[in-house]
Length: 317
Length: 308
Image (cartoon, rainbow over all chains, first blue to last red; front, side, top):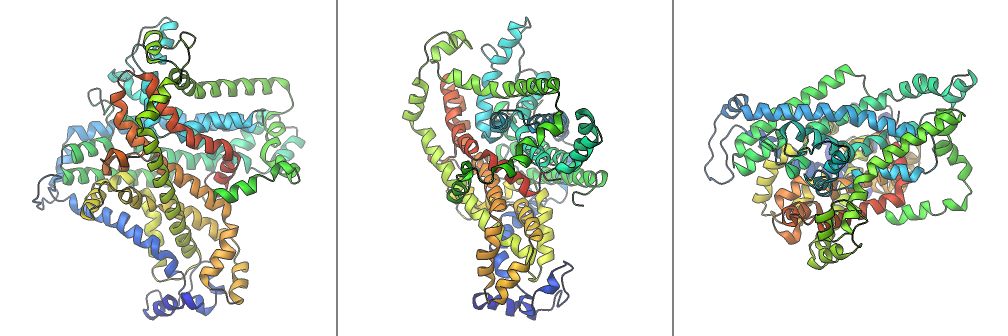
């Protein structure tokens, strides 16, 4: 006790939420000496959190009301000018549209393919390590590696994609240079790259399903197909909600692979909102305006999250 | 942690506890999902093989390309049988020296991020779960809310901050902002919430300090979840791109993803070299996964993320 005594005895003196026991079922059980425990434990995290999360968030908000620049010294308060400008900025709307389009065309396959893979692997067919490795390995690749490989796949003359098309008798496609195709090409490599994480979440969920459900169903004479539809999939519903929510949020934040592969091109057709923020802030040096767009984007993410929480049941039972 | 995990996985072939865990982990699937017929197994096997083939193709392409000479790649494209296989590209990359330096930087940075994150997150999560310190609920609420903050949102103010601290172009500038992992704190807290408190109470009655209780009672129970969190933090830090890309300009301090991205253009049409460097950069984590995959899959289950 001696080492922990000081914070515990100092803290209780300020009233605050006082001696009211925590609503958690166990707080009442801890002895009186633990009434103010844990302060030291949380301190390192709290300091880092304050420095590298809270402060930047607050500073960013403040910055969004100024014309702060990366290169010029003077900064002045401009009120809501940045926000007004963002709403009238066609490039913002274009980038937002690209981001939503990317989210739409990646989320569905990233959930369904992951589910399919997990179900197939969970059948217990021989070669488990190989399947798990094949599906999860891409997730372990740094973005720079993914883009190196796919740039080669999409290479116009010698790349695998066009050679395959050629072998099948089709003409070459400008995978990363054709406005109509580029975003689909990025989505394809993103599915390949990140499906492994969702696959793993599904696999873990499948492995934690209780056998008893299946045994009962088997006794009732339910066939494999029947068991899949009336036991496995319903049991996975919560996992699907979780995977879908995480995936939507992850897809909205797309930046790295697009920035490296196309820099948002051709003709801004793949530029996501985060890249526009980067372009405005670090290439255009307008930190204030970049912050304003960041916070509009953050507001969108919060709206999406709340919508998801309202439309889907809560995670915990 | 690596030491303990090896110790824990090794004894398995000794085969004592095997039958029990097989049931839940592997054999559970086959009769329950597929039934006993032959056709479903063949269909499922075919589908699996097709998926795996598709997913491995880019790796195979990278491997074959990296083993050809630049001239063969440029002339014949994808015909792996034309021209002799050679390790020339790998030799050139290692000789140029960038990739090994970046790999060391990545390893150092990812390790430090992981250690610091896991230590402060575990302590904080335990305090959130058990503690009664002032402001606990407010801090917890803010922490959970911050899970939604996209890290990219913070980049502009963080950059200003690092400039003010004079940390631009240092390891610390890369590491420090990454150690705040609210999601991991949340996962750990949920785990601690589910751990029964009787053991801790007993230790406390014996007069153990809070730190002592945490170290000798709580931590040993939490090894799987701490391992899982470590794995995810490490993968995240190893692959992080945007922040190190912005904060590091000195080539000798770059991490692998950033370094590779910066030299990408200089490879030009040297696809053999670019594939060789991609595979060198990919190898470490994939090897780790190969050795620990069973544990990693189970770890995901323990995070409660995949659990039903």
